[in-house]
Length: 230
Image (cartoon, rainbow, N blue to C red; front, side, top):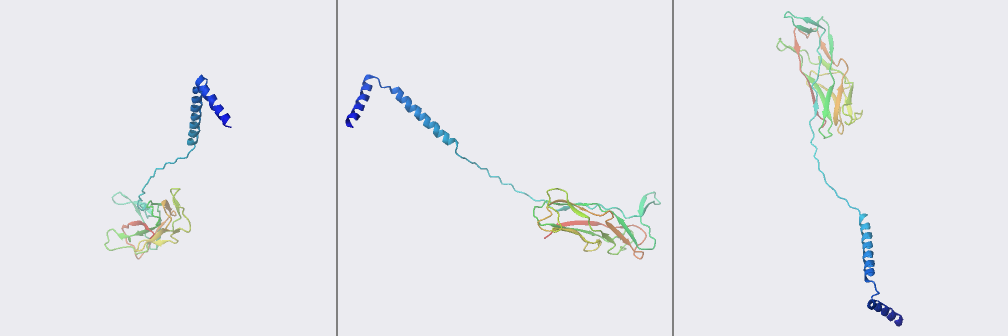
């Protein structure tokens, strides 16, 4: 064993002395192997996983509940021309109780609050007051609103209207008093978005009793309000 070892060393020594030992080849092998190792290491490094994140905070600011101004037709039987040449719409008194109807256009209801509180829409009116006879009014209960026909979403992504979260006025109700009529109630967790509240063709009815009505003009103011259902 020792002889063989020394023999190998001697042969290596002779190679050095004789100039037969190719050092360049040895270095080439070393460099090439090192390069291959470097390449393999780089290959593994390329398969590593990295993730970066960026946080974004956005604050939402809710708006206010709103309902559109009611658009109401006029109560009348016919149009006449007065002594000044003006066209006037009149109701003809005939000594009997009269029920005169008129239109109420749909109401637009908007809930951009972002609270999910739901809401309640109420309609009230002043008593009809005579414009020239002081302290002459039609009796309370003379003006009634019919039940709405539907509440529908204007924006498709509004909270769905269902029988469980929405209650419409169920019977014709007087509005010319202190309580008025609750047209629609939407429960908490619903009503977020934009809606249309629709009415039948003749949604408002004015009842005139012969012992309560005087010749001349009357006027009233109709109010629609919306409030959170809390």
